[in-house]
Length: 122
Image (cartoon, rainbow, N blue to C red; front, side, top):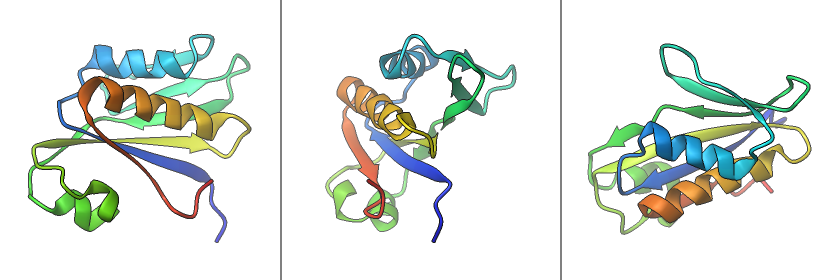
């Protein structure tokens, strides 16, 4: 299977507000260009040449007990709803997967929770 993105999910125990999301993106690199669409949805990071590096989707509330574990496996065991699912997709470019992980780690460090990365990803 050819992978076109590197996916990281932060399951947080508190709702990430816009400031927290932007702080997490800033932790990934303050020298990067940020695009926040007027109508929300997806926040994107670009390199200084305009190349896409990272897309972060709006947080999704998970309310059903066991749902995160069902979707992500044992790494989500023990987390009780409400949880916030924040998905970051990095382009298959040098350094981009690391940005996704730094972003997710920053969210979890501030809001509690866990970071999930697919087993078939580096």
